[in-house]
Image (tube, rainbow, N blue to C red; front, top):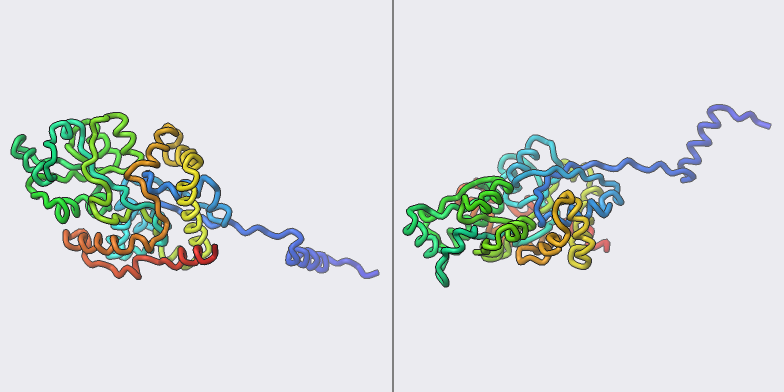
Length: 341
């Protein structure tokens, strides 16, 4: 009878492993995602909470930021791999060598313009916005102050597009106040500004606290087809971890589907992720049916409006050159996931 040597024992264990008797589970890939805490990012929150990223071996660490430009600064320093915010800062970042590619959308038309209660109470009826703002300055001697996020962000770009290209407001009649999301909300509620760009669920929260707040322009009024929150991935991360990116995109698609088909289940996920349990579930359900809520995963849907937005950014000087959409977007991951369904 042959002796069982140590070498033979090691070979036997290796063979057993290769044959799959006790398969070794691969470690999950970690992705650091900079995210803006708005309802438009819900597909990502839902997918993370439902465990769909983990199912594909992807661990997504969500890091909260106040604006898209803040997320881009994190991307520039290499502290995030994934951007879950507006597309405008992604284009600005490319001009500074930050190579992010949009792989999925999450929402469109989410930024709206609202009037604070004090300003809204004195608005004339059936008067175009340009005339409305003009009358306010003539009456008070002060321009209408509008809070929005920093220059180069999607809210700021949409607001300026509306003022210039849609409503044709005299620049002398308005003053843009660049501020973070929380600061803009507080300024609106305290009537420290006359108006503000705003997104859900903050819109619903603000209107509950002050019913006098009035919507002046919806997302598609500000910029038709307005691209909202997107998921963009660093080129280095995508090249190294293509399967992880497909898992990320698949999770976003499933997140959108759940939000559309089972909003109550999705609302519970959002409450624990976006609101950290501080937002009432009824409030989240109300925000999900808001006129400012439109979930979309397909990146192809926002291509045309993105081109319009970027051309306007160049016009106002927040973007030096308009990047080719083929370099700004990588729809291959979305297309592959859809084809594999």
